[in-house]
Amino acid sequence: MTIRTRFAPSPTGYLHIGGARTALFSWLYARKHGGTFILRIEDTDLERSTAESVDAILQGMTWLGLEYDEGPFFQTHRFPRYKEILDRLLVEGKAYRCYCTKERLEQLRAEQMARKEKPRYDGRCRDGVANPPKDIPPVIRFRNPQEGAVVVDDQVRGRVVFQNTELDDLIIARSDSTPTYNFTVVVDDMDMNITHVIRGDDHLNNTPRQLNMLLALGVPPPVYAHVPMILGADGARLSKRHGAVSVMQYRDEGYLPEALLNYLVRLGWSHGDQEIFSIDEMTRLFDIVNVNNSASTFNPDKLLWLNQHYLKSSDPAHVARHLSHHLGQHQIDPSQGPPLTDVVISQRERAKTLAEMAAGSVFFYKEPDGYDEKDANAHLKPAIAPVLADLHARLEALPLWTTEAIHEVIAATATAHDLKLGKIAQPVRVALCGRAVSPPIDQTLFLVGRARALQRIDRALLYLGGKP
RNA sequence: GCUCCCUUCGUCUAGCGGUCCAGGACGUUGCCCUCUCAAGGCGAAAACAGGGGUUCGAGUCCCCUAGGGAGCACCA
Image (cartoon, rainbow, N blue to C red; front, top):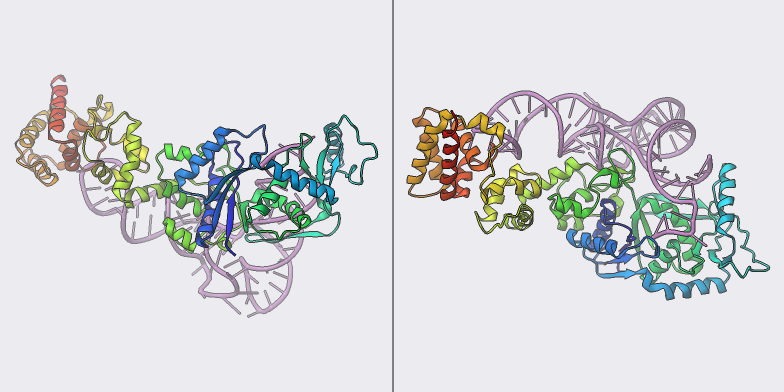
């Protein structure tokens, strides 16, 4: 049997962290077993589904590299098929038409709540309606068994038993004849031969209903695995309130997809004490049985740490490609300056995100607009002018513009003026970068380039000359 | 309210009856290194929700309580 898993988001928003992890687990499980990963768009809610959301989800999947083997399938394209099954269920007496009005249903619910009962349909139309009202378009309800129990042998939860008396006859087709979620899921999982349903914990309560429908349809159920939810820092379910929840927002903030993936895979799943997993490793090592069963809280700091880890350890050329995009955000053309891979190497251990790296690298390509006031006051004092002038001359005279040669020149200048290295590096930094933070000063000078460096030192001298 | 699920350091987790006075990671913190910022190295503080059982022995099994989450839609 070949494994077939699916990710089935509803297009009512972007791809968020929770959905991305569910997709990752399903993808990983299929990949690990050489199976098939299917993308299905559950868009039966015509009111809330949008084409923009579909695009956003697809874009998120692509950025993460979670490529699907089949799909995307759209449920709205499968209405004839659902109709077919609906009719079959009706004919077989496994479903029935219900003429109860929304008003009556609401009232029923209110009464049950008042009596502290679980709100549910009372089955008024279950045994047939003598005179079906012509003016009320009926909904179709599934005739759920009234006795016995449904057993869910969940791969992460273990055995969960639901009494059928707790379930009611759910609506499987609305009065406008469109099918509803619990029903379309069942038909699709059946038609698409899904073998493993890996989905959020919030669906555990839907599972017995789906199992009953599968039973009525006479097909063997898939294996279920309900993964725990991801909570926000306040313990509540992750939502827009918690900041960056859209996967694409992480791209914009300068995260590498492999870092996000690594972070997500460790949320709820573990392999001993290992923290770092390449895509290959996670597909090889992942297993649903190692998924734990308690909800986890999203921890931005750890994601940041992982991101820097990948920034530091990935191929600089790979990081450079991503950095290029972020430099573009600063109207920088990376071809007009030092090679991007060199910039990456000099900056990667002092940036946690690509956005940060880009912001800290602008000076390589563009003269700073001005000096940071605090840094200039601290380091660009008149007394340093002669030192800068001397350094300028020595750098200009340097036969070879290399990091090593530059380093020696700075050291020699410092010695000549009886200064510690830092006393000269900081002013030069401010002159070159506009502020007192940059990679090692010799590297910084080297990467900025001789012409630009001398020009910026001149400007600093001018600035100092203007000071009393 | 009812039903279902969950509960180890602040956070992510290891632990699958003895090897646990509970291990790793992020974060916090001390020291070292150092031209800035970092990165790095070596340390430190920090948890089995509470209560009953079962057992020679429980973080590990069972029950109860408390807390948290989810579901109970003509949403998915």
